[in-house]
Length: 376
Image 1 (cartoon, rainbow, N blue to C red):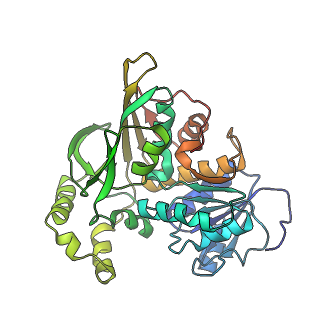
Image 2 (spheres, rainbow, N blue to C red; image 1 turned 135 degrees about the horizontal axis):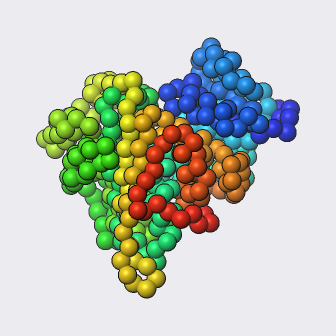
């Protein structure tokens, strides 16, 4: 890889012209006019088209099937934001070899574990390797972790998601939901417990007057939040804003029909069932947290997040914040080298400022008072 031609920070967004990648790239350009942006993907024309709309940007070909997906870059870069699935960890390995920071927002739980397991076989990372694949680029989890710092012990963290069927979504987003046929581990009273997907229903009244029944689903938050907060119980649940859609999908899973259409042969069918994006709608998340203070008294709080621009916008904002954290911009301390969960090392204050600037509403009696971030 050639040597960088300027002292300006440079960032590559892989999948930069996708649904989330485009929004993240635009946000980075708007919020950080002092950085150079590379819009990366397999389609040079689409990458160039977006780059022409932005200052200090250019399109580059990045193919995640290459042995080294970074080999075509015109110069060395400071950070890579991965907004496309890296199924064989080739981008992860290339970033470690080149000493380039990586922020990955695309991995479901098993793929986070794969990435962590991959790293010991590589050389010790000389730059941050940030796993930011918890729900919506770890935005809700980061606020939960920061709120937990005010507690001597955390008994419970629950995250409930209201997913609008009319919301926008990228095709890679179905990878999360495509895991619905597989049981997964939650933490209950300090111990792992296997639970079937879309089980354990719970009634939730979301801001906006929507009362829904959420059900368990697997996200990396289920592994990161117990590790970063010591919470005795952690659960994540989801509901669609159409009760028939939630109930129908739960029936397919409980009846075993979903398992019958597992495997690559039926992938197109599952994707048709799960991927029917609209033009955009509110994305709402509620985080409930309970624990005890140093004197033993009980503490409980709630954080409500509402992005009127939808779940892809919330993800893109969280991703942009992680790039800024890695580079030490907008009040963030520059990230240390090594593998890290985004929610474990992100301060709440600059995140909340970025959410507010992007029109994302955050409210509730569990809002964290910012504290210095702690490493995993």
